[in-house]
Length: 279
Image 1 (cartoon, rainbow, N blue to C red):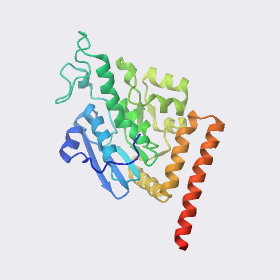
Image 2: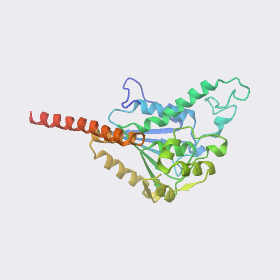
Image 3: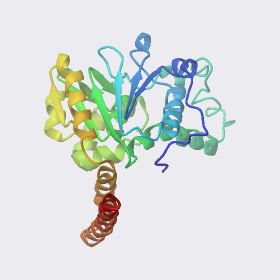
Image 4: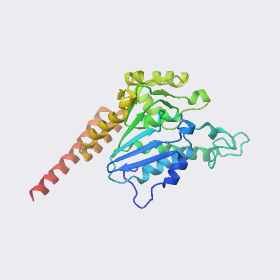
């Protein structure tokens, strides 16, 4: 997975961001992404996710923190259900076109879903710390987008819901692994197969939220988290996040070996810096 932006690739234009229902503001080391389709309760489309992937590919190299939020008092109502109509969303492919009569190629559809997943995967990059600032409902794809982030800071009115099974679908936007990693298989089954709302306090108790605050305090709480991350050495933060990300899949022996390698790298870099300062 790429860990640095490609300076030769232009970022999405304001017009492209607008068509995708996204806002983007980059100020120094902080990028703020806003889901902005208030007329559809911030529901997202394929274009939203492919544009999110493009944002990830073109972020300036000095960005360290990415904050994802929704416009207004809702994070996201999830996928725009018009994607499942034969006509699809205006200007985008229908996700079901040709499936009923067999004219669609399942491999092509699987490839398209892989493209959409790229809009979620880059949020796990070790060189970034990603924060979901959640107000109101985060349903389906919105829940999965929040799960893609390193930290979830919730307003006390936030509610998570994995709606896909109730619609005859499965969660396919990278959300099943982090959900199981956080709450375990049995609780994940219960949350997904009942499609119930998980309120902010329960989300905190389950480990799905790092912090819950009154809605009016959410911006300040996010800013405090951003400031704390930026106060940490960038290279150490990157190495530490990489270690933590691989830990669930490593044995203890593999993980402590990874720790040794990472620490040798950090000590080497620190020693080189000290030598340069004395030169």
